[in-house]
Length: 158
Image 1 (cartoon, rainbow, N blue to C red):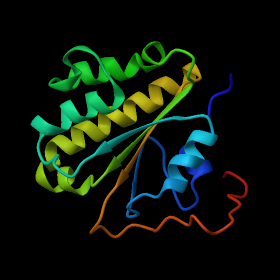
Image 2 (tube, one colour):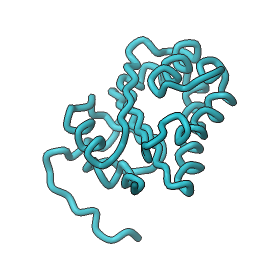
Image 3 (cartoon, one colour):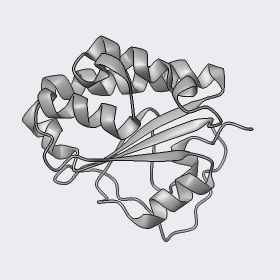
Image 4 (cartoon, rainbow, N blue to C red):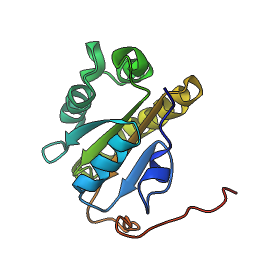
């Protein structure tokens, strides 16, 4: 079993690693492309997520995280570090967070903490040949669009 490629290598127009922001509302092609690349795709509908009290339970439910991850940031990070054990037989999980702008605007301080935790989990799991990334779909931010219908060649990595 091989580790899936980075999300930025699978979805045209996406750049970055860990937590990727995009202005696209999400299309079935994204889910299909990520699943075809070997990711288990988990989805979070952020329409009603505006504060920490909604965000942590929503994250824990979307990723099926155990314990106190639904109300404690330290426990969230610990549970994310255990993703390979929580998803045996998988070597990559991607979280698609729709309407993430609601949480970003509603509780920016906690958003930043959660973003850092999600990114740290991505970086810590990578050496263990387990991929974890988050794609946060946001509206109302000046972000480059996804190029889903445009063939792309990322070219050499510099």
